[in-house]
Image (cartoon, rainbow, N blue to C red; front, side, top):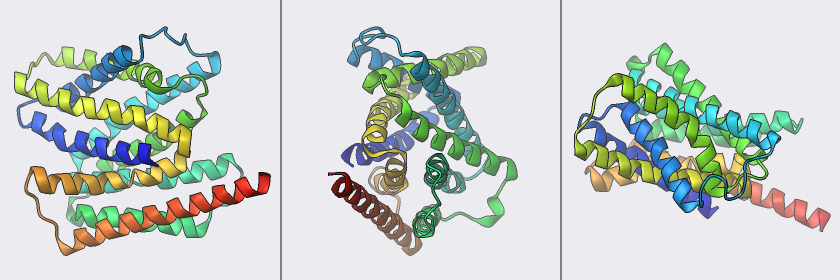
Length: 286
């Protein structure tokens, strides 16, 4: 569980520090290019190079390519949604991905979805909605579509990452970040705009948080499975709010405090439910 909680916290730090780079004239694409270049750089240094454990098997290679495409599309989709919608609405729609992850798992296992679990996930989405405090008149159909696409691709990444067997840790971060690094790097080159040094510095800070979070995320998926990991990642918007209180001096309304309570409660319920299920399975099979 600790890997997923730390992932949520580091992803929240990524979200909070990225605007500091935007304020210094860094574009979204520049921040993403630095993010994935940092992923590749850190994973190469900390993972001992690309060939330390050898190249992946054919099956793992296919899964890693799918994960890379999902990561590329998820980041672009979410950034596009944030551009077209208020961040509050974009994040709320994006955080339907734990529900999508759960439904994919049920389809893959040919099992019937548990209505109680879906209701708890619904409470979590509502909690994120309260946290975000969106306004109905700010809805945009194209932005909503991008947010849903990003959610679906994040759910795909959850499921695919669990099935990779022989690519682990920093090597997984490395292999899934090469394609996004190239795409965003070429994009920045074509933009031809170099932001100030301060923007680059905050981009590095945000990127380092994301790289470490992605490493822990892959560990969490392997240890806890895609559904439990996705559920615990509901804590990310809670951490974003709490960090904003300290860094930017933001304040919370009563509705937002209710959102924090709903997200924390729903996350705890699903986690306890999954723990009991695993416990029953262990007792059954010894």
